[in-house]
Length: 65
Image (tube, rainbow, N blue to C red):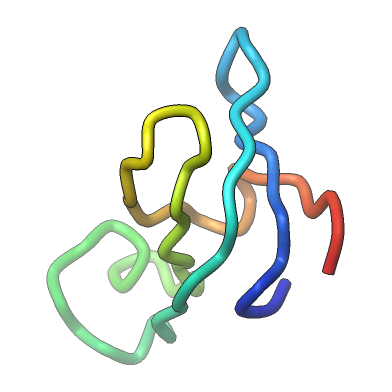
């Protein structure tokens, strides 16, 4: 997954698509769940409502890189 990838959130009943706009390595200790368990997190701009929030790579499916 890269900046600019189109992703789908896999835990939503209705399809939720977004654009990866940034990422953070787990070594950046910010107290988040992802830094604690050692997974990279991605900041996604969601098309449905324009919100932005971070997701774990295990929670999205890449549609287009």
